[in-house]
Image 1 (tube, protein in one colour):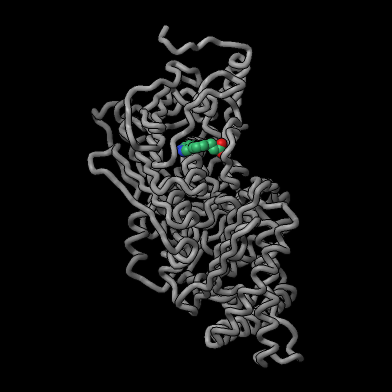
Image 2: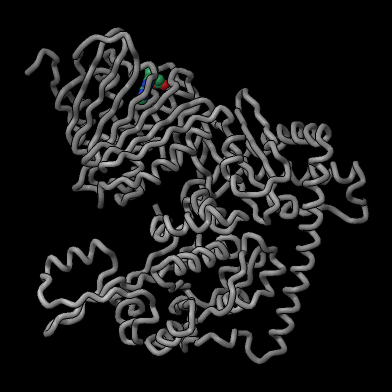
Length: 637
Ligand code: 0RA
């Protein structure tokens, strides 16, 4: 044994039991053991360094994905304290890595931890779920190091050299007996670190992926903070106010807001509490919306842009075309909702509202041209909403007159219980025909799509109601759109998009997803939207049953199993090449098909995708589709 005593006292036994509990039920601590949980490990470690940056001591965080999926996170903060912890008798650093929820309990609290929601479970959870962890600290003139295996200390903290620098470096290899995969997705990590850099003005975060021969890397550093964030989100859109409106306030409830209007018709508001994306919104978002509605209405009235008799503009009119990011810091956040991403602290609504009222109304007074341009857009939004309501009524009346409210092209199923029913939305006539013949008509309906797809990003609701291609989708789903959408009225439990595995298929898929995202969002949130996965290859050989492969990896694997002798490989270019039986067997039979559920968690990434795809600039679009033809598979990461 080395000179550093390391005996297990009563406290330590408790510690080991604690980490054993994490290994037994990893999902309780990091959400899941899928790739999402794997990425979470990295966020946990990086969050600790971001806390050090928020405390004002760290300027640069460097993340490296090393060959073999080893993660290295290095910061230039003060270094985790190395002194002995009074109660446990072991170093503070080791305590942080071995005691559940021990982080942030050693004085010098920075105040607002990047914690809460799914985050904030701490370094000890990462330790418990890793094959090994190695922590190197530079501090107090020395270099210190400690090592762990599956949560157990194999080398307690010891001095291994001297250094005048300070900082913390953590390297770890996640446990492959716990996680489904250890293959980190560079793009997912890159997106999260970009977001973190936007949210922490001045902090530099770099990421490098050394797993392949040509390394990938990026560095994010935004002096503009949320202003840069909003400019990034709007980079392919036409702006109404060139410079985002910026609101910042320190004190007990630090608050930062950036707002920029574009000529698009969508509403993109992202909110964060302690750097966590509050996808479900909450009291801070409520305060923001109330203030926005009130300040613009007051300004419009007092400047005679809106007459008293016109009544008020609705919140949704004022939010048309808005891109905004709201970031608040709350000391004891209460997170509610299904995914624990909804802020519950009721006092925050009023605080956000009053802070924003003051700054926003002052801004409008000082910038009358911008105020006028935004209000003109709000007023036409209000007119369009009225027109949409009329169009909707027209559709309803027309439906009431016609015997059936269902679109003519729809081949419906016989089952009446919506939960058991599925509708396949299929592009093109030949695939639609095969699907109609191949389906199980008891519970599977087919809706073929025809004609040119409307670009939903650029269209207001009134046009969408009257679009020939989307109207059948609206009628088939049967639950309305926009604010009228009622998830309880959906006619099918599964809405399945079936498109070719090529660039055009990716395009139609994205257009439909955009439409669902913007106009039937609960359908995605509720998990009703799926993507069918047609096979890419068919392998046939005399005396052997046909084998289908759904990816290139699977093809390689199957070829290895079967051997290449006398084998015929058919590559499917489209759904139309399959006969009804094959389509049923490979893509529609619930026993054998693969369905990918579309998840909406990562709304920012999806919105960016949609914006690039649908936005005004055609150049980046083609390129993007080609690069990301398979992106939809990553929606749930
Ligand atoms: C000084 C005091 C405290 C933490 C740190 C430095 C520190 C921790 C980490 C974790 C990763 N990098 C780091 N750099 C510095 C304790 C502060 C507290 O308990 O609130």
